[in-house]
Image (cartoon, rainbow, N blue to C red; front, top):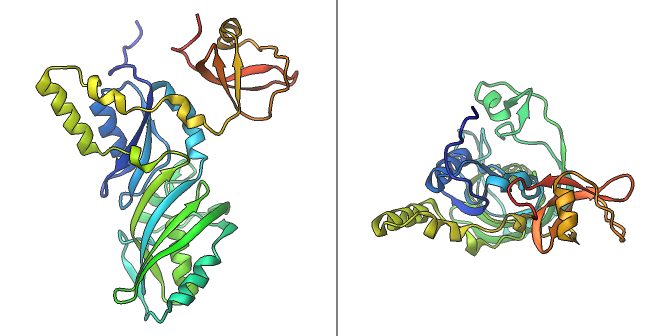
Length: 314
């Protein structure tokens, strides 16, 4: 007898505003519990120090998390000059203190040097894994392991404020996937000759998602309590906050097929179309309904890549 999954089947994307002081996984589990969802996953961890946009994918939406992991991100970061820490943020121990003799002009000039493509080594305190174990666990044990250099792109990095009295700098960064903001801050501090570390980090955007769509755990709890007080299903208030699954795929080309072709596509059969298909992943609609992603097979036909098991044309 098959084991019944705990929770309700629910599909969609929640833009959670992760609070400071908890891990992304803990925030995920809290949101999953509030929604009483069978299945959920997040799309790119934020450090406990960091706040901001953490897209939570429920149900079938978990099949498309990679598209959000691969998209660009926007952050607001505040850094403290004159101190370098073990983790490049204020959660670590101060290992070096230096005088700060920096002008606004020097700061702006150094910030501009980070624009464009470059190679970056991930922090030892990142969640990336080495031999199946997160790097931060090695770091906590005082062990340094090899890390692969990765290509990143800083699309923009603006100087928003320079508080010379407190030696604090605030910047807004629009970067490619996999970019470590605290590594940029640590490098900036070294380039300035004074050291620096992150004291505040807020992710304001993931891809095209707007920041005004974010919701807090406190707001979700309030809605849950409201539903209980009114003796209605929590979904009455909670589910209207969810974005559609295909909102994660706005950058993909779209192919529309008929209902009959959609049935064949959903059963793993290649669909022959009269037009040339683009390379890479394709968003597929059948009779106007989103049914998954596809790709071009060697014969130039459309084949399924990620199908929806509970949303098929009839």
